[in-house]
Structures are given as structure tokens and as C-alpha cells.
Image (cartoon, rainbow, N blue to C red; front, side):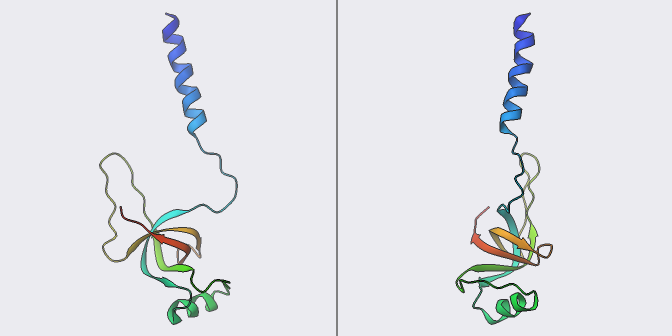
Length: 106
């Protein structure tokens, strides 16, 4: 009888401890980007310039035409056959640009 009361409390406490609390800062996200390169690439530099984004490091990896990769459920797969899979520190303009990207393998 006592175990039947204790188990739900432990489950609830575990869930509460594992739930992240948003802190308002940028967090990395997995994306599928149509094109990936450094900020010194002329095409990427032009896109950054058009959006008024200034990067101090020209070696920063930037993704263009990025869409979030969402994997839901066990056994689900996400396809990025037309681009590069990356995780980016910041995304700008609804995924148009991903800044501070690192290539990943899913």
C-alpha cells in the first residue's frame, strides 16, 4: 500500500528534475541547411551583409536555408538528403541563417 503512494511521487520528482527551464538565451539546435560555409565565403558574406549581421570571426561556420530537424518518437528518422546536417548556436530570420554551426552525423 505504501509503495503505491511512493512510486508516483518518485516519478513526479524525476520528471520535474529532468525538465529544462528556459533561460531566455540562445541554445543550439540541429538543422538541415541547404548550404554551409565560412563567413568569408562571398555568397554567405553577401547574405550576412543584406541582413545587417556583422561577425568578428570570418572563420565562423554559417548555414544558409536551414530548417530544424525534429525527431519524434522511438525509431523515427529525419531526412536531410538535400543539405548538410549541422548544429548551430544561433538561428536568424526563421532559419534563413544558422550561425556558429558544427557539422553533425545523425
